[in-house]
Image (tube, rainbow, N blue to C red):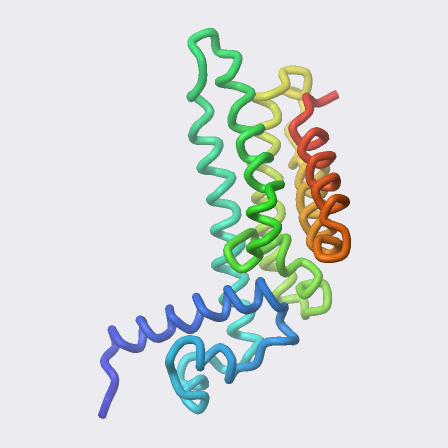
Length: 205
């Protein structure tokens, strides 16, 4: 029986959504096409009706995940007007709120629900230039938006228009390190997150 265009679109969405969770939790190399299709409730043999290759699926997952990560920072920027009547919390809250959420135990412990950059940066470094170009766009977009948050949080840095790669690197690196040691040394994992929270949300120099 011929599958409708709407069903094809719905199936593709399920494949991408399930692949995103598994890739972020286990990495590209440890997830097979069979794993993804089983989680999506579809047959292994049907995969190539939706994607030309596993690499094409990896790219689709990263493209969507990176856009979602950029959108998450953008949403925080949109909340810059929140705060107390004196305006103090209005400039401090968005950056602190985003940093605290990103560098939280919840984010550390649920990579399948979290930032694609922190979950798949190492995999992207071992991938080809096409996928890495997606990361260029996503990483630069996040750093640009973080720069806006930092300028609002710190008038001293208002003259610097460049992307805030330092804050982004601190945050992403801390999540990666905290995950790497969480099972063996939970206290160290928490210390890494706490130290990064203070550094990432500190006023600019």
